[in-house]
Each structure stands twice: as C-alpha cells, then as structure tokens.
Length: 437
Ligand code: AVJ
Ligand code: FE
Picture: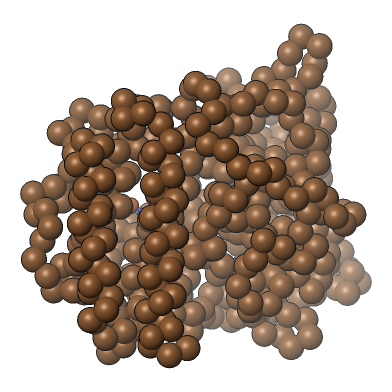
C-alpha cells in the first residue's frame, strides 16, 4: 500500500465511524440524548463529545502539534473523572455544541492527515494514531448501541434482518495439541494489549462449531439452570441470587410459557437458532457446567480462530488474512441482531468453526492480563489499568462491532456480571486420549 492509499484508507475508516456516530446520535431527540437510560451507561451526548475530545487529544494536539480546539473540557470527558451514572449532572456540551465540537475537531484532523508523515514515530507509523482513534470511536458507537438497546420507548433504529442459515452447523472441532503464535507484533493497527506475538502451547481441546443458541439456552432454563447452585461458581450463585437472574437480559416469559425479548424497541419471540446474547460470564459458566463442558480459555479461542493447520501460521481471521465482508461475518451494525447459526459458512475456520468473528462477543474463562513483554502504548488507561482478576476476556466482536475494531487478536474485557454488552459464548472441553485428531 502506498502512503496515498493509506491516507485514503484512513479517511474512509474515520468517515465510516462518523457516519455511524451521527446515525446513533440523530435517531433520538435532544432530550433523549441527554437522558440517563441506564446507570450502566453515559448519556449519549457524553459519548459524542468524548469521541471528539479523544480525537482532539491524540490527533489535533499530540500527533498534529496544533492548538487546542477546546482546552477547557478535557476533565468533563475524561472517563476516569466521573462515573457513568453521574455524567448527566455535569455541565456537558449541549447536543448542538457537541455536534459542532466533533465537526471542528474532525476538520482539523483531516488537515493533519494531509500533512503529517505516516511513518517515523511509533504514534504515526502506518497511521497508528488515526486507526486507534477510529477504533475508539467505533467502540463508543457499540457502547451507544447498547444504550439504544437499554432505552425504553418505540424503535429508533432500523436495519435489514441478517441472512438466514445456509449451512447445517453443529458439533465440535478438535484442535490438536501444540504451540501456536498468539497475539501480534506485526499488525500495524493492533492495540497494545494484543502485543507482542508469543508462542503458546495449547493442549488438545474440542470447541463448539457454533455459539450456544437461544433454543439451547431455553433448555438450560427449563432444566432448572437458574435454581441449581451446583451449576454455578460461588460468586456466580451469589450474583444470581442478589440480582434475581432468571433469564438473559431483555427476556420475558408469558403465561403460556413462550419467551419474548425486547430488541431495540420491538418485542418479538425469541428466535431459537440465533446465538444467545445479553448473558453474563456467570450465566455462561453455569450453562457450560450444565452441558458437561466449559468455556474456552482465551488461548483456545484464539487458536481456534487463527491457527492454520496446513501451514502452522496464525492468520488474521478464521477464513484467512482478507478483510471481513458481508458474506464472512455479521459486523458493523449492518443488522441489529446476531444471525442464525449457519448463516456464515464463508467465515468458517479451516477446522470448521463458524461465526467466531461477529454476531456475539464470546466470553472466555481467562482474566484480562498483559501478554509476556506487554508495554502500554500510547497510554496506560486503555488496557493496563484494567489488568488483574476483575475482568474476563471476550473475543470475536458482535453484530455491533465495526470491522476496524475487531480481528483474531482483538481483546475485549468486562466484569463477569455484565449483560448489557452484546455477549454470548461457545462451549469447549478437554480432548480425550487419542482424540488428538
Ligand atoms: C475495550 C470496550 C472495554 O468501553 O471500556 C473506550 C473501550 N476504552 N474508551 C470500554 C474504550 C476507552 C473499552 N472496552
Ligand atoms: Fe473512550
């Protein structure tokens, strides 16, 4: 790729993020933009100006070396200064001020993009800082999409339904024992926590070819999954009781026993063949124990997604190194729900594992930590301050994740109790003697 092609690509990626941000923030009234839809979330108008503020900090001031656009608002939009549930109380920019602010910042950034060398410093190499900011905006767009899902009232967002099942997908794939390369040192737009590449030995394991579906999850509920402490971890059961969990978030059962869900303002029957979404890590773990299985570790998930048995190489995606497409993965808010299992045969891995990328984030059993040799870049508050045992890693992206913000190495994380994110899971188990393919 020439530098000119890279500039064009960056401009396109930034523009795609902004089109989506505009859609998410223009679909509801200004009053709703400023409202607290859930204590878990910021008001949408905070996300909007925070997107602009991060862009200003890194691209206008740091990389561009330009004068601040608004040097008085950094503190308001610093995510570490104010808890999400308190942000409506702050003297935030109004919706029209926030729109004007992000526009002024973007105009300057496009000028910086025209004039700055895209190589020569760690922040500028291959346009890293621009890509980091595009990923940041898309991450907040997914967060805003979760706020839209939490908001009450009639539908504000609309999209075509995902493609139907076109392949029969079931059972497990066995991944043989051996090392593989986890993480990356060469992907120019990979974030700090995906680095560096390192060899990991993984014992033979079996992993489901598809995420757990709503139909399977209903069997778990019907079999007393939510009333059998033996299926849950101690912390999981304590949370199950304290929060009175009985089903995934947004589900309701009618008096005839039929399961309904609320999805972006519509109430509809739960679709049996769709991956389950809006379950916590604790629920995923209980389901796995009920099924006689377990969740995959993060390394298992990545090996299933990237390891090419023909060459031993780790690839960018399950299907190879080529970019995602509408045939390969349900990404980018093209649809407002996960697609049925079997809808993306073109996205399968060589071992026949489907829908690893897109549809639903997948909980793994692994706490979020730095890889051996981790160094924060460019700031510790993206990942490093979250390392430890409080968070679990999620992989693969959801229908609400843009392709610039997910790949086989991409790591997401959250608290094990969280359910408002677009998260489901798939099952794994140790391979048996002689099953090592
Ligand atoms: C990677 C999704 C966990 O939303 O907390 C956005 C992304 N970091 N702004 C989050 C992020 C700073 C982050 N997650
Ligand atoms: Fe942020």
